[in-house]
Length: 422
Image (cartoon, rainbow, N blue to C red; front, side):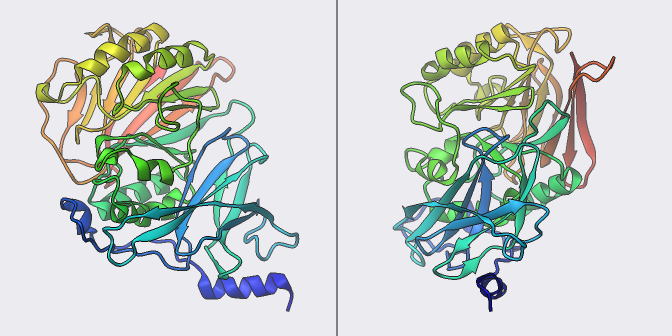
């Protein structure tokens, strides 16, 4: 039997079924306790696979996953190979860096191994098939795919989701519905509060186990929320996601970052850190960019859903910078409802998106808050989990450049939409 057939046999024995649990992870809905039990303890099979970016989306991707052993590799090939194990040519191999993540409060597994492999020198605009695992244990994941960004500006879409936090089986149903609706989506923005207790590993087990069937194929672009910081620094968030560096000087790497995709600049800020620590860097990042579209994401909204949830310090520090560089949309979470402002500039409603910035709040988990009627709200509703699809269409012939945003609920009903033409 050839080595490739041996590996294929091992794969059949130790294959990971990437799916989800219909059991609601109620541990995420209670306050932290010294002794906890994860519903999803680590084993030899690699699981909780999630994609992110730390480098150029045209030529790289980061793949992260969990197991109870310290070794990890990625085998990958362009997607004309249905399975890298069975391809006629040897697969490419990337070794993972492994972090031992400890949580002494978990009685059924106080530590786990988290593996991160950064694939580089990939072809732009190419779909790849990959598996993750450990040659020593012989356990490998099922094949999954990802696609690199195109080399040139082309039409593309991405998803935007607000707080998950808990209610993960319902959140996962929404995520799967979004991915079924737009399997061509390039990535998903997630506006913070992914979990309830950011330094309890069982919360991350709930989130990643429920979401991995999609997030193993759709890169996530996340930001830090207040719940990522429960228990102190967002240590487990930073360990979980491999993200771009080069953020604001003096701030811990990966807490804020920029990402370029096609003709769009994304600036991700950390609203849990003092806003002044990022204002100069934000001004420079926006000012140095020639991108046609500019988007910013952070957790706490400058225009909130109720007066008692106001974030005045953020608004005073960052909104003038958004106005100066004409940011098109600011994506936020935190308020656990859906809200879209009129185009805003200088704290006032303006006539069109060409003159101001649209601010959005969304929610994807089951925790809901009430809203008040604010004069800057153009669209709003409560008690409904939603996802948004943003489509960027570059100029073609005489047709102008266009952005379209549509928001859908779990049943696929269109709840909001707007467009921007440049």
